[in-house]
Image (cartoon, rainbow over all chains, first blue to last red; front, side):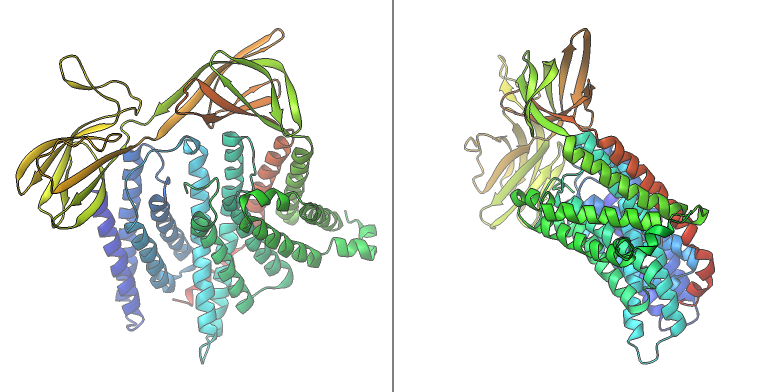
Amino acid sequence: MQVTFLRIALGSYLLSFLFSWLNSYSRNGLFSRLAAWLLKAGFALHTLILVMRWYEAKRPPFANMYEALVLFAWAIILIYMLFDFIYKIRFMSRPVSGLVLIIMGFAAVLDNSIGPLMPALQSRWITIHVVSYFLGYAAMSLSVICGIYYLRSSKSANPDAEKLKALDSLGYYSIAFAFPFLTIGMTTGSIWANVAWGTYWNWDPKETCSLITWMVYALYLHLRMFKGLKAEKAAWLSVIGYFAVLFTFVGVNFILPGLHSYS
Amino acid sequence: MCLSGLKENKIVEFLGSIKLAFILFCCLILACLYGALVSEEFRPAVYYSWWFLLLLFLFGGNLLICGLSRLSGSFNKLGSTLTHAAVLVILAGSLYSYLFAVRGTIEFTEGQGVDSFVSNKGEQSLGFKVILDDFTLAWYAPYNYKVKFFVQDKGIRGVSLVKQHKAYVIKGSGYSFTVLEYFSDFKMDENGVPRNNSEQPDNPAALIEIKGPGGIEKRWLFARHPEISMSSDKNIKLLFSMEPAIREFSSRVRFIGGSQQAQRVIKVNSPGEFKGYTFYQSGYDAGRLDWTALDVVKDPGVFWVFAGFILLNFGIIINYLQKIKPAKDGGKGAACR
């Protein structure tokens, strides 16, 4: 059942992506509305998949890379819908559905069997730690989309100043929104490590990379507030920050094994 | 309140400047990255080196001076003040841990008691006795069962994670197979009926039904004895394996210290405390089920670090609510539709 739902959700995201793309050639708004509804339908199904997996596994569904990617894609859509509700950012529907398709496509080729939780992961801290991080990473995904859009739009022959300003602001808002979640994720992880291993900081590569990511975004926010970081430089820093996010989330597992070898 | 005296001194002004904060931030990012990239055995040489500690010390000093010189009673700065104070509390707590924390391990078998342990500061007396009354290692059941298959005439090979009574079709081969029964510890009883001798994964075995071009046959497979294969169809080879997964390991211990006595069950994620020491379940040996290892920690810095974490989270959330005002720019976002 889950696999069928996952395929339907992927189909919804694919159609949403195609309608968003068609919308750039048509200005009547029909394709945009269709894309939005398909994204919402896919998200509803995606939520159901997570709930079913949680119920079936009898544990939170974030124990392996497949489950982490499914949760990450879900969080990106959730944050996108929240931001769309507040800032009206329908123009981001295409890159968001595209990114979600890539993540879900990657998840689809991974082992999706439900495995048991190793003793260290059997903790109530897992939910707040993982969910906080993924909400933060999801908002960072919006910031990098804004950054890339900004860099691409600013290079065009007739850049739209109003649009660039909005992209710059939106990139900043998404980082500012994500930062508390990164902080909650990092500190709850540290408390959990102390409960499991008796030490709140091990300088494990995953821990260190999460600290680096946190520091890069702290630097972004400080530069923005005190040195007026804006426009292209801000866009580039958000791209660098997202590299740190991706390296912490995926890269470390393959390149720098450590205590987080399971995640 | 504004500490104007601090501002007037040029050196103090530089030490508390945002410019120095940015430089130190960048240096710390690079130093952390360098430490993550070196091999595991060299990591302590980076993170506990004099230059890394100096960087942290300078960063803490910069935060302190910067914070004091900008200290004001303004409610608008509450989030920012809490955040920066939190980082200082965390750094101070970490320093306290670095200087005074004691860590070590005790290893014992059931029935054995110890009153000392080898720590990072040498042999340490606990001042009380710890006795291991019982050690339990629990496995997940069912385990992860896998079947590797190879169909010789078609050259098809693969591996499937299998579940009981579920048919697995080997595409393009004309074969399918179903696991009828599996056992973690296979044994024939006196009547010749197969049964599970225990829940321990000592002799994993499976009875498999194979449907192929030649008809249906049943085959016993033994994970630890793949050479035993009673089969009429030699074209299809199957190998059975079992990956046992540990569910939990726990120690029931007694603490005896003078007139005080206590009993605790220590598990991973559920440590036990006695007289300022915390005991963490850390080791087991699947081949020696009466033996275990516990980590022993006495860290006075933990309280301060966690207090810093709470402050940090509050500070950052308050700062977000105070400084980020989305409503003002909401209309501009709409322009991007």
